[in-house]
Image (cartoon, rainbow, N blue to C red; front, side, top):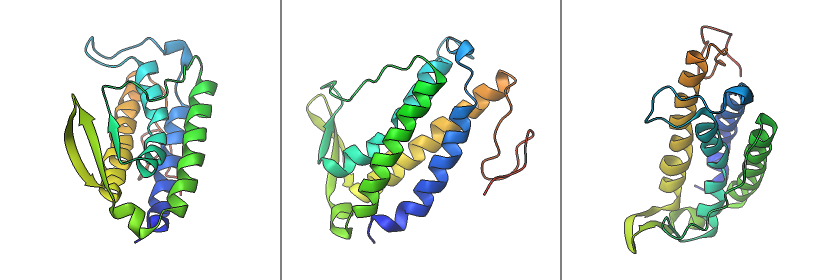
Length: 166
């Protein structure tokens, strides 16, 4: 299995995620559903940054969460959010398309406080810590949209607000 096997899933999930991000109301960036929750801006920004984790995973053998060297692009508008997301998707799609089977079985570690929190083959990291992570936060974002009375996009089937897309 090389990276092209994951491209249809990647393309589908990124299209669904972009549709959700397109709905973010920048005038409500500070809104939170609960005091312990992310603000709308923080959640949407985190979600917009996640695609670049695919590229980072394929380019490295580990990530040190304590190093603080992951790019922190400021987001001030929905336009910024979408640009950040689109840039990450384009870069990561190209990396995934060229990833070999050997690339995908290489170990990758998440480091925390100098220790490996986990070490997994890159293919597993891509599915769990990138794709599933995106789906998880996109789900949170759609709840935020509903609570803010913003139409929720159809994702895997119809939403209460619209018919399904591709």
